[in-house]
Image (tube, rainbow, N blue to C red; front, side, top):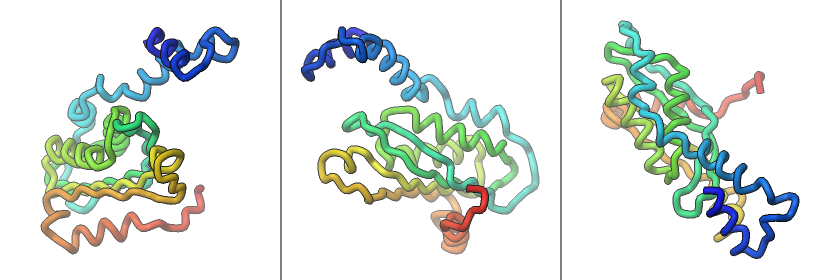
Length: 186
C-alpha cells in the first residue's frame, strides 16, 4: 500500500520525499485500512452477540446515526444520517449493535443504495422481525467537490422489508418518527 501511495504522489506531480509528504504513504495505508475495516467483520456475528428474547412488540427506532463511507466509484467520502427501525417478533437486539451494523457496512467501498439494503437485510435475516426499515440521508463529495458540484444536494434512500413494505400505516409511523425534530441536546 505504501509503495502504491508513493507512486500515486509521483504521478500527480508531487515529491513524496518532501517534509509534509514523507509519512503520507504510511498514514494513508492506516487510514484506508480503518475506512475499509467493515470487510473484516460479519454483521450477523455482531448482532447475534446481543439478541435477547422479549415479548416487546412495538416499533424500535434508532435515528440520526452518523454514517461515513467511501463511494466505490470515486473513492471519495459520502456521509450523513441513518435511521433504522424494526418491529420485533420475539427477539430484540442491543441498540448499540444496530449502530455497529451501520458502521460495519459503511466501512466498505459502497453505493448508498446497496448500503441501505445491506443494513436492512442483515437485521431482517438475523432478528427475524415482522419488518425492518432503513432510511439514509447523505451528502456525496463526488457530487459536491467534483462533477456537477452541487454542494446542497442530499441523496435519500430507503429499504422497507416485511410489514414496513406491506403495511402503509407501519411505514408512515416510521417516517413520522424520523422527521427532524428540535433536539435540545445538540
